[in-house]
Length: 198
Image (cartoon, rainbow, N blue to C red; front, side, top):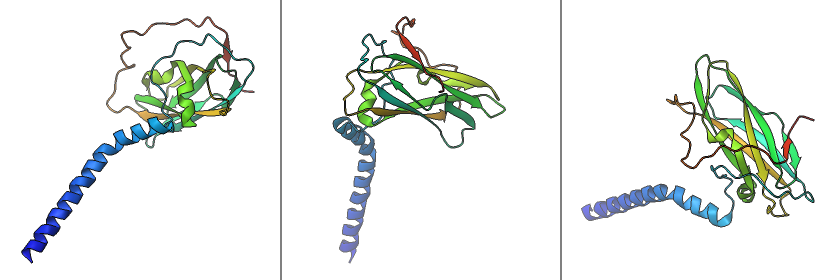
């Protein structure tokens, strides 16, 4: 009987170790799976160069969505819900944020794109998501986004959705993340589309 209990205990211990190992490996495995299948909607966090080529023979609809993480007392909305752009055209849109608290809160917007395959074709030249956004209690801000859709976007994709989820950066007092060593200031001198409410 004691041998049977020992065997059962060993099996349960091995099962627990296997579950822990699987849970530990799940995030990297998911990232590999998404990279292989192209279903991951994560965008690059890097600043893109401005587009030099505009495909005027084609139009793509870009939808804008804003989410707020639970517990964050902010208003966060895009100024336009959707626009139609030519691939390669530099386009400026703005989001609006307002801190509903009485004290300063630092927010960070995390972007995602759907369908996931389109994420690699949405290039952000300037984005409020590159920096943390500190707002004093009751303060409002316009958050600009300068982007373009890569002309190499597959023809099968005619609509893409850019969603931002705003998270609170607890314990953060810095106004911005540290700029990268090779960050440069760029002046928009190419044709620019400014999105406005219709």
